[in-house]
Length: 276
Image (cartoon, rainbow, N blue to C red; front, side):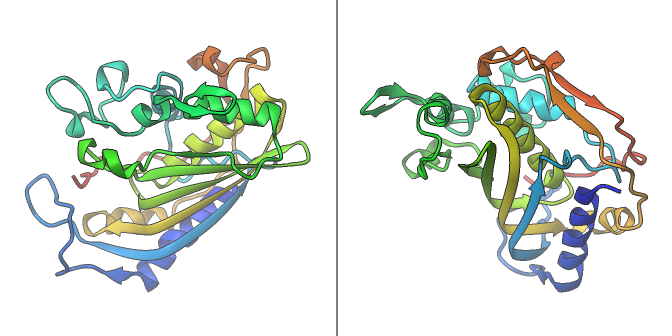
């Protein structure tokens, strides 16, 4: 059975058994009906995924790889902050009348900065460093830019990655300030696992480990019954993931270049509300 299912269940079980209940506290989030959205939460959750051994896509419920890739290409390849460049509806609640979500995610990745070697945005600098100075300990991307927070419709949840090369393997630490474990817990893991595969391929490395660090890992009160059912869900073997090996330029990846095989998953869960 897949390791990611076991890690996911262990994290959910620990939140339910040991998590702090924020009911009655002054929380920011609300449900669409205006009711406060309370959680059970854990501080400082750290999970490790070895991408050389397994692709970390949940099997206890289906996760759309196409949706994951769509958002990844929107932010990291298009470097867009406009939902009109994005084919899913998950960002609609945070967009203005022009479709903009503010100076967040893709916008920050596309801002050019001056280095001694010239101007780069964060994605191009990442690729440059891995090709030219792979043992640097300064290969970091960051979208949590304080001076622009007032112009973001939503502060970044996943906000930084630190890349590190060991031998022929590309590893990364993913930092996340807040994780809704039901809505996006595995989505974020899969998305950044795919990103490591992409960056590794175009810079001459193999995928290594993904270390996921979450400051506030939580289950919303209205999600608890669904999560409890997932704890008893059947697990299946991990699927196989690969990229079109002919792609050597990060900006050439298209949906058909992401290949998932042998994916068996349990039944989908009922539609659930998302806190705003």
